[in-house]
Amino acid sequence: MGSAKSTHLEILRMLRDSEGSFVSGVTLAEKVGISRPGVWKHINRLKQMGYEIQSRSRRGYMLVAVPDSLAHGEIVPNLNTRWLAHTYHYLTTLGSTNDYALILAAEGAPHGTVVIAEEQTKGRGRLKREWMSCANRGIYLSILLRDLLPIRIAPQTSYIGSLALVKTLREEFGIAASIKWPNDVLINGRKVAGILTETQSDQDFTRFTVVGIGINVNHSRQEMAGPFRYPATSIAIETGFAVKRQKVLLEFIGRFEREYERFLEKGLSALLPEIEQYSEMMGKTITVVYGNREMVGKACGISAEGALLLLRDDGTQEPVWAGDIVRIEGGI
Ligand code: BTN
Image (cartoon, rainbow, N blue to C red; front, top):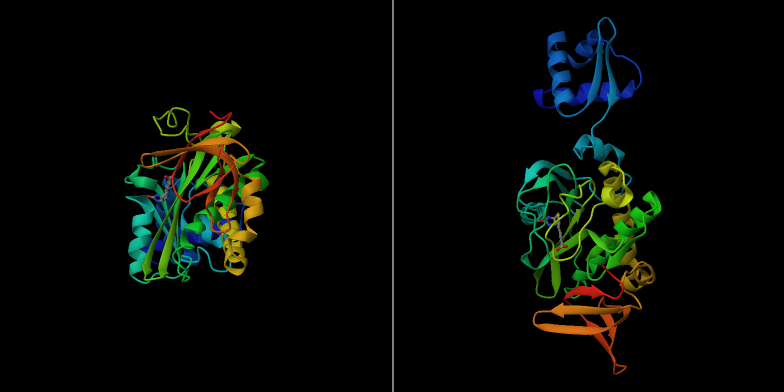
């Protein structure tokens, strides 16, 4: 007999296997080893989870539609990765997926562990800012990486997240997304995603790295009205239609794994041509703020170590390692 926890998932799997046709209550009851009223109870639980299931007397149950949930059962069986997200923690609500991933990392969770929440109550952005994480609209995820990286290289993993997302949006959804240094993704000049990378290190090498990514997928205009430090948007606002978060997440995870392997094998320089090609600011005059300092110049490249190269009026080139771009020529 299936455990109370997983019986509904067994029933769901049987309904999926017979997609488009009815499965009788008797068959479900026999295969799962429970009574017919028991089946009915579990069907109701699935309905509450958002699965649309038709019931017909004498014919049984048919799965009509699945919710856009990021639960284990909707994502893990459809993954096309060698190691990423094979350990998958899904929570409906959580303070912050990065905080949770940092705890799991300290407890020895494996390389490639993913933490996903449908809602965050203490979502964190860079520089201790808040990350708005309303329920079931966005993707709030953290990836645990356990490779030992030289400390100066670890921040470069943020580029893997932004490149993987930009390529997902461009190639799978036809959306001309771009990268805003150091770790934002924009659509039509507005921020649609942000990345927060955190590490723990021993002397010169990282013990682990957590890459946290927040993507605004189906947020409404009202939810994105702000105030935010930089104009914000969602994929749905920019395209005019709701997007399946499952598809965004699956594509993103697959691409993150591929880009990360490319990065490990060949270094950031292998990714730079694409990062520059998809950059929002290359060739434009930008203003970067770091603490009290404001720098203005033309963005002219990204160095092999990940610094933004700023061409100043006097013709000198200055590498910028940290800060916020607060203005982009011709931007919003
Ligand atoms: C930024 O733009 O400042 C970075 C935002 C990062 C937000 C994500 S959402 C998932 C993960 N958990 C967090 O608390 N933050 C990151």
